Length: 122
Image (cartoon, rainbow, N blue to C red; front, side, top):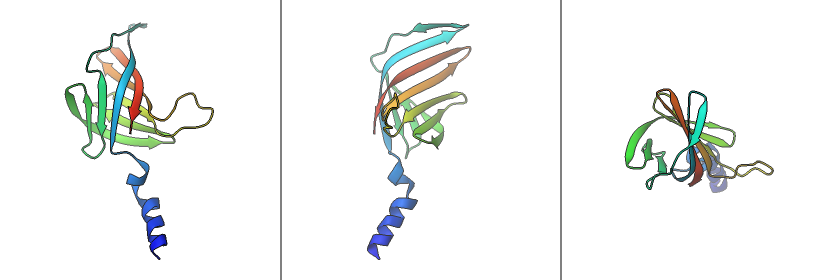
């Protein structure tokens, strides 16, 4: 009976399949505007922290509320503001180019787009 309860708890608990906090380092950034993309210098505080329980997104010293959290296959999507998001690989898949924790972040800033790449620990 206890075994059945434990299995049910794992199957129906969303916490069993997601992390509470993602701590991410940025390895590369680009900015694209008017059809031209350029590399950007990394800042000393270029990190991201996603707190799923508090539903917050931290970029350096700035903390904002998450607008949503979505899951699709091996990816978690964190929606930030009206038009920005972070996409994180949650599982290693054989022969897939990205590994667990790899992320891309896309931020829309007026008529430019800043794209950041890196790795999250969770």
